[in-house]
Length: 333
Image (cartoon, rainbow, N blue to C red; front, side, top):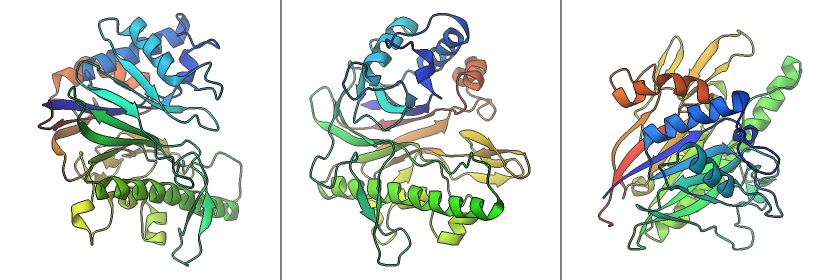
């Protein structure tokens, strides 16, 4: 069986709903909903992780999954997507997912042992000084299980939106350096926590996929050289345990004068003002998953793909990120 698995940072989807959790049907919100729907219809995913989805309230009166189901019924009426969400975050821009119940079943299956929940504080030594510091996921990673129609486990999935490296306050250069280093360590800590969970799955002979907006890439910048690590490489795993290393579904990005290729987003350099292409949205898969192909749905790069080109305008306008889609093949029916 072949499954289409994707992830999409949909950029503040909360703004597309009113206070009661119903999709807005006028103005620029309606236009962007239609553009997002065009992209998702073209992707036709069996499972799609959503980053920056609609809000989930702690009292459960409004959830990301229910809003996504209402939204897909309205804007993708030929589909029957179901939604799933996890622990609510301390802020906004929730993690959730939609899936095709005719192909897979998806369950929220978090680890709940004390001190191991993704919505609780955790300790990590991010500086290799044998001193652990306390951190907390701002957005608890979403732990899911994807099951085949025979209820056999296809893979565990962790959807993440890890710490942004952006600095949006007015600061001097000394403070900028201090905040940059602090934010990078927080990013490392979050990815170390996620990687530990991956190892727990692999020890149980379960497959795992990590996906989302990691806000980091491979060999991207000065701080990765300074700390001799990157967040994505932490997620990939230990080279001394090659059987446990996760594999990217995308090719290694190449550096050019505009940034990286392939790229899933871009940012404005704070100093030069230039727009830099970056690959910060990822899908990483364990060795036991057979990945047939994977691509960033970037219409500027995927010129020969007629499906991507058919929704080129929507891809450029619907979000500030491009989605990532891959296909995996399993023996599960």
